[in-house]
Image (cartoon, rainbow, N blue to C red; front, side, top):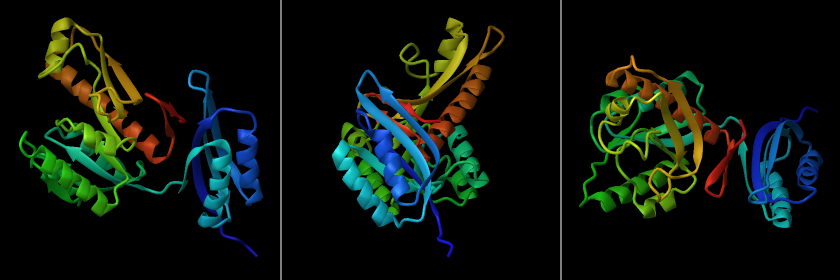
Length: 284
């Protein structure tokens, strides 16, 4: 009789020691699992071992999780198990710039980004029409120095209400408080140009043009209480030269930002990113 198989993705980290791969693959084999993809890395700097496995198995989730829990206790593992390809429930935060949110919404609709964008949150109304064009709920949460705490409490309430697993700051031009950053640890991704700290403040591409930069870059990283210094997931660059105006540099920068952010979001949603202290391990 045919038994229905489920495709799972297992990601884990633990102190490095002999026998981890054997133990994991043996457990999966004992439960009828067929490994279809496996990647691992031992970090000599931190002494930690990282592994990501895709496997098809007939075992019910609770039985597989129970077995993995016992194995995790043995190896002091941090681990997660999910259905491979499941779309991750995501809240996207925006201000006025449209390039990143438009790209994420288009990729989601096209089926190339494994997320379910359950709400778009803006501190301005500028992008409401864009969100509603894609039939997304738009929530306006204005932020001032006096309302920041209230706005962040409302945001956390919305995240809980929607069961959101990931928060993406798609050029959201507000700094999250240390408390909120800690609450969203490992599940909030930000994107910014890579001119920092050289060109701070307004009009960074005009500052870059004035200095004659030769590379335009962007960095996607996890949000931490250290502004723009969270663990890096992805970076991208384009080469430029003296013929580019500040306006063309800005356009190139927007393109680089959306590419880097989309890759970071996809890799996170596919459980390809594991935290390694202030760095990340990315199994591409």
